[in-house]
Length: 133
Image 1 (cartoon, rainbow, N blue to C red):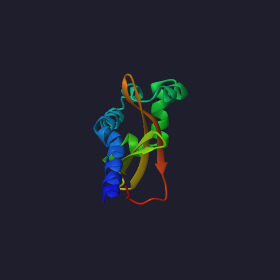
Image 2: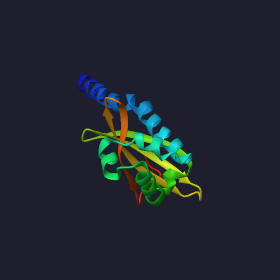
Image 3: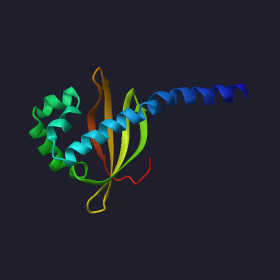
Image 4: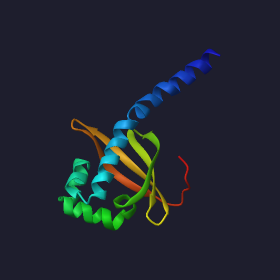
């Protein structure tokens, strides 16, 4: 019984860091999506990590990439946050987005914490998966 209690406590303690970060992480993603809906790529670009900013160099290039590669993020009909996971020391937020045509897309957002707050470091479109968390 003692070992079981220790195991459950360990799992709960390990889960706390990721779950405690969910609200700040989803707030950043929400803010970026809100900026996309206004075509405010300058603000959306501020939520990208330094490495993403170096790759795209300007908000305009970043916006073009999102419009072409992630149209469901640029114009979502619905956004639902699923699990926030710690994978090998990186936080990944699973997001289910329904686009304007009703198609459901699962994406993973890799988040990094900087002195200035949480930033989006990568977005992966997941294919071949259902609506699991």
